[in-house]
Amino acid sequence: MNTPPKLGELERDVNKLVNLFKSKNVEALKSFMGQCPPAGMKNVAVDAIHQYSRPESMLLALNILAESYSRGIDPELGVALSKAIYMYSQELFTGEPSTNHLYNAGRAAINCAIGLNALGRHEELLIFAAAAEQWCEARGHLEVKADLLLYRIGALIDLARYEEAEVLLHQIAWQGVLKDRPADRIRQEALVQRVQQALRSPIELPSTQPPLSDKETMIENRRSMLKSLGALAEILLPEEADLVSNFVAKSLTQQELEKDLPKSLAEWALENQMRMDHLTDLLSGKSPGDVLRDYTRAIGRPDLTEKLLGETALPNDDSDNSHR
Image (cartoon, rainbow, N blue to C red):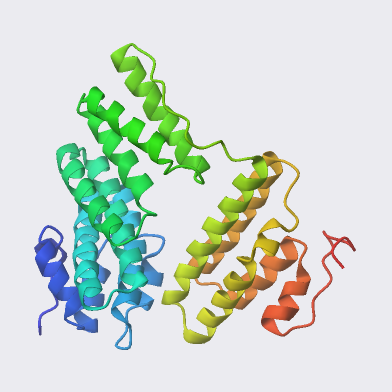
């Protein structure tokens, strides 16, 4: 490909995008991405594309970019990118059944649903999300089920197909797919209210799983955030990826997950926002070492700095002697 492709030629032609991803033509791919609209994660995604990139690392970076577009910057482009990533990840999984390919396919399916919802293409969303949910579930990737079901329910409500939406709401309840997903349970409750208002009758959902305690909620959210951080290691330099992976592996032990939990969900929300801020620093290009150093001091665990970075722990004025 001597002439770099133009954005307008590809954004609505998913097959061409798939071929571009498979071509390993770094110059052409970077040229295409350079034409894409500005986005917070664009530079990170572009930097992750180089001649030594593994396909799954490239697709992870593209997924991050596609999500930004699907959520509002350019949903049409977000949908096209997401469909292409989804199709290529499926093809890669057929050749090599790796969890990385499943993760990329699932994330792309969710990003596509986000974009289709933003565009009001609800019929298309229903068909795509149902097929993606089935494909992922058949291969043991269940993490996307809740998101795709919720987007399908939202699409049915927007199409005034309330009885069908109620059926899926009952399916979510008896399958217990939202058991460890407090934020999605809030989304579910909002959808239930919309259906109840439309049908003018209450919906009694079966309660197959007891609600999570405050402690379980905080632990599950810590676990989810750490897994997201671990996935980002794919697009970092090797030495940085090892640093992040080691941190995530140590932090995911049950002992670490339960350590120093806040006394209430209100305190946890403040701590969680601080963690998200540090994750944003990493995505914005700040050195992983600096991010982890700031993070461990902020949570009063400077001892982790020494263990993970091989540095002498610096005193933390905020924590005093409570963790020494």
